[in-house]
Amino acid sequence: MQTKRKTTRRIYVGQVPIGDGAPIAVQSMTNTDTRDVSSTIHQIEQLSEAGCEIIRLAIPDKEAVVAFKDIKSKVKKPLIADIHFDHRLALAILDAGADGLRINPGNIGTHENVAKVVKAAGDLNVPIRIGVNSGSLHKEILQKYGYPSPEAMVESALKHVRIIEDLGFDQIKISLKSSNVINTIEAYKLLHEKVDYPLHIGVTEAGTLISGTVKSAIGIGYLLANGIGDTLRVSLTRDPVDEVRVAYEILRALDIRHRGPEIISCPTCGRCEIDLFGLVDEVERALSGIETSPTVAIMGCVVNGPGEAKEADIGIAGGRGQGILFKKGKVLRKVPENKIAEILISEVKKLV
Image (cartoon, rainbow, N blue to C red; front, side, top):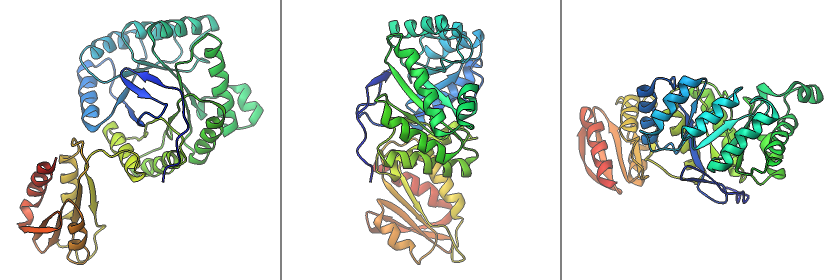
């Protein structure tokens, strides 16, 4: 069960509320070249369909700024610009309509240049995410702690927060990311006690679909279960749509948010006599855009299959070249194996 969340300050990224009890928002980041407008828009549309609520884009140069403005005019989702090293890009992207900035005040330029960016963001009411990454801490902090410890990450974050606070700006959210799950958890726990700004949580550079999902589920899941976090991103070396799907499964597992069907399927054994792997994959992908949350059971044999299928809103229990279709606990009919996916998808869509 999720511990009651700490009340944090409310900010808005576009029209999406963050903090102060708002639903935990799911974010991702495009991995297209932002300068490729059509490809980036296509990926944003895919992310939106999967339920991504805030989307971040890398802005490496002026050409990307021009592309961003074009992209922004053609999509509905709030867009955050990820800026490093050049305050002029941050100023330009604010003029281009960015709904949020992800910057590190320590690498954006001189104090005077940081002040220009913060003032422009304040004038436009655009929030800033201070993103601290364990792999890019300042030398003096690393020398003090000896390695990128949780304490080092928190000290770095608070240093950046003070820079912006001293400029009269408080539309802030903070992230502390490490590829080390334990360090990530400990850093957020420390920061959680020190600030009331909303926290963007995640395990950075988590890895491939399997290793990254495991790390993210443990790290993000632990934090959420303990009431820490207002928005999240699952980081995978994968299509970012998969990041969104994993994010919602973490939220579902903790009974925080539910989006899309919950698919219950068996791990298979020697009794399975249908292509369950292919069936589950086909059904899951076909239903990925559905927002409501029916329970769909896809079971491979007659041992536990009928019981599990009966408990679901809709389900199939497989047999030799066929399946028995259940709906709300009642047997509907037998279905030949080559029609199971088509019929199951159709029946689920009737429920939503």
